[in-house]
Image (cartoon, rainbow, N blue to C red; front, side, top):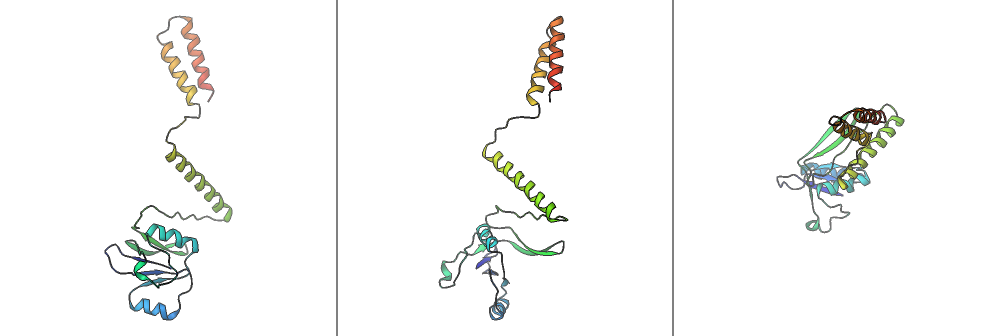
Length: 172
């Protein structure tokens, strides 16, 4: 079970539960102006608790020891035919959701693999910011250096250097 408050300090105004919320508790929540969300994704609740800065609790024996999460806005958003909840202005501010849509499961699986690869590259780049240029960069750099020296070299030696630089440009 996860609860959260608004940024302005208003007491708990949303209750998120992994299971069904029966009619009586739901009516009590409604009387108190608390939005009740039931059947929340098991893994999603753990991530949501981390992002909102709240605790996942199983009982209310000691409510004073429960840390309530915070966000500025909870809104219901339609994505295609599906309705999803969007939590904006989260306390940690270090999370986002990416919604993938496609015409078939094959397209979605390929998009997910591509996204995973892109995120892995991003993580690698952040961990190790140094880069090794590829795609013929070394050959082009060498050809440019040779052309620069060839411009100041007299005679047939300059022609040979220019030919070598041209050959280097053909490699990539």
